[in-house]
Image (cartoon, rainbow over all chains, first blue to last red; front, side, top):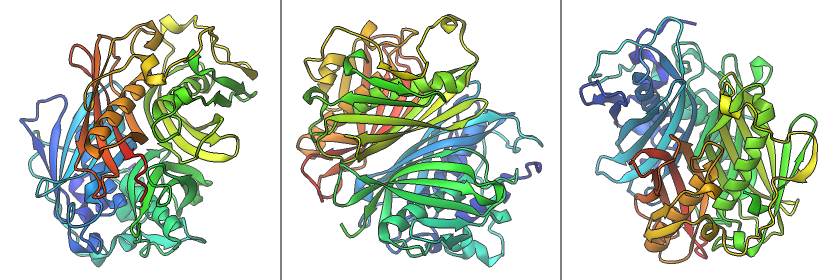
Length: 290
Length: 263
């Protein structure tokens, strides 16, 4: 394991350019934070909306950090995350553009932390709600260094042009052998300070895979005809070697819209690590043309 | 739990499969088994599966997610459980739901916190041997709908109250985990009826358990996440369950749909 250097230098966080600030004086045992996501055009879809995998990467970043603040001098690793998008912010102008994320820790136990959050547009419209569970651990090399309360954490975007590439390219996604299969190559920029694949990268891969299955495309950049309306992802083991293979399977129609919404199960495995299971997710995918 | 009449099959590796007969008392407004009922089934089976999976330790349910499928009318609902991870501190179990042994009826995932076996549970005798058997026994018959039997009362749109009693408690005298889901279901449906303007059902649930719910009455409060979809067909909901002392005991999100509003 590498020592944790600076939260400013996590590649996924630098790509997302989420600015985070602690709310309050830093003494609350159940910390609160607020994040501002500027929504650079390259990461938004044609309507100006963030895909659910990218949104999950955003909330995993700020939710994990907020959970970690409640555990200092220990730190955390996300074990599972549940996200649900607001129904009225799935189409049209509502929920597009820059976003605000408000996060607070609900429970800090001996070995786990539960944290909730809300995502809104800058106009105050609800975009999504989420909660995540983290396991408390003592990281080798120590936890990240924070002064409390955490002041506005600005991300410095590296000069490398990959940090201005579309999500499918930045996250190292490659078409699999069929629609509903995507490969992810865990480049160094996609790893956390301990060398493990960032949970947000896994979320982007599984979201892309689920949408690809429903829209019938294997091209990670082309699965734009559907949106994941909710997801729950369980991180089962660290992704270390790669390539990681995300495979989606159809689990039948959703009662909400039997002719439009599909339940999709996604499994992510690390092919280079004896095909070890890395993540398991359930999603609901809605076709945009319904 | 006993009123559901779960028949469980357990194999030599500890894997579990359970089946219930679906009666009209278990159905929601859309004709599918209510999420509250499915949660009871999978929580009971998950607890049973966790005993051998966590042995010699113990496991408490930490969270639950359920996605119901549009499987249509059914006579039987089966749940097949698969252990996906047994770590030092967590256990993850996936549940596959099947209608009449042939149609997909949804999926669920349960997380358990693995802990040293508590002293007060050291002598607890739960049957885990291979074979087929009823899960619990009772002479009673469910002769009303499940939520009425549970004793949940809607006091306002999105607000449901329950007085705890032995029948809805777990082994430590707190509200049973599946009862959290029942209250969340009812609070969500109640809010949906009010905001969507018709009979509603919950399609999926994401539930995190935070604290033992002991002091009564317990109140589940549902609030909308944004507005309904533009066709008033569905709504995202957050449900908080507090005990009588104001402690937040569980936190959930659901999606509610108006029956008959298929896009």
